[in-house]
Image 1 (cartoon, one colour):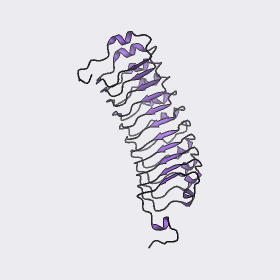
Image 2: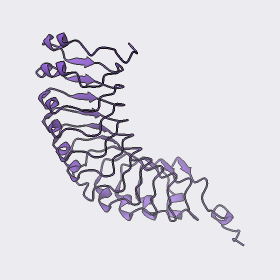
Image 3: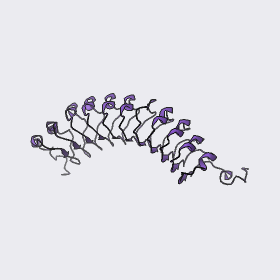
Length: 272
């Protein structure tokens, strides 16, 4: 192993009719092993991480028993429309590829609980993503996202949303509909203000807004009874709303590298 000439998995794998898990990660594969399709009636977990696969064939839709697909750190530029046929898929990991878009059919993966797409080149998400009603974890960090879908109504099971290092300038008002959200990571975007509806995320415990362009902090954050961690470092804030600083649930408040004057921390001293 380690040579560019390392051979693909033997075709005999396809004759192992009771195989439920196959992991061929880290084998310098350039093409999807066709022999795996022959396991369509049994395979539940498929690992293809750390190869050089550029195309996921449409035939992957035949793996209808698949519950976990891991194809991180390959060379994919797209996902086939037939991915919609993986009706039992619960975990899909495709981080570290070259994806520029997602097929609308991804919204038909209604059993999906984890979707990891960090480190791609996504500029937007299909509106159909709102149909992933069982989704609990969504990783979209280090992409080129400029906006989120306007309607997030169906994502009411989502607990973790990771959007760090994108190009977001704002959040949709429908963010309030993520009623189970506990972690929201917006590190390194271009957000200038938060919608007041963010105060409706009553399950939120961790909110990371470091390295954005915030000038004002939304007072409705004080309506988050479970918020324990708030990071607004490296923004353009000049003050923290009293409602926020008085929050009893807050255990970690990080406000470094902003534009606070001394009166922010010592109200009796006026700015000169």
